[in-house]
Length: 86
Image (tube, rainbow, N blue to C red; front, side, top):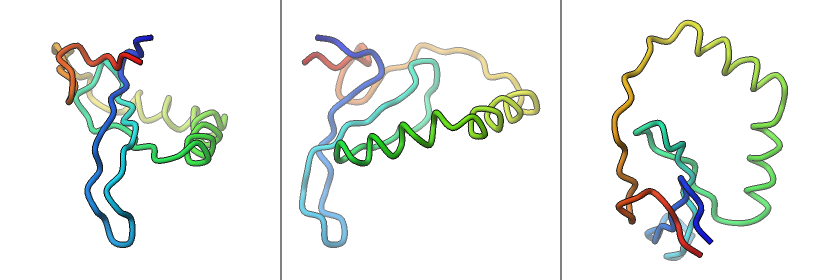
């Protein structure tokens, strides 16, 4: 299975967390850093936050004032296509 905009990352030691694997979710139309997910519970928390109507409204309002960004071809870290194959 391929998932566009999803990559696996090897995460370095950070404070008390040992080296681990995480999921990075990056919108395919941007060159920004994505969201790093380390567990199913964190994914659920992020999902709840991002589906909150107030967060959606805020994002839409920000979009109206931010300058338009030219679209470039994006190469995701870890893959040349930005697709994770499972």
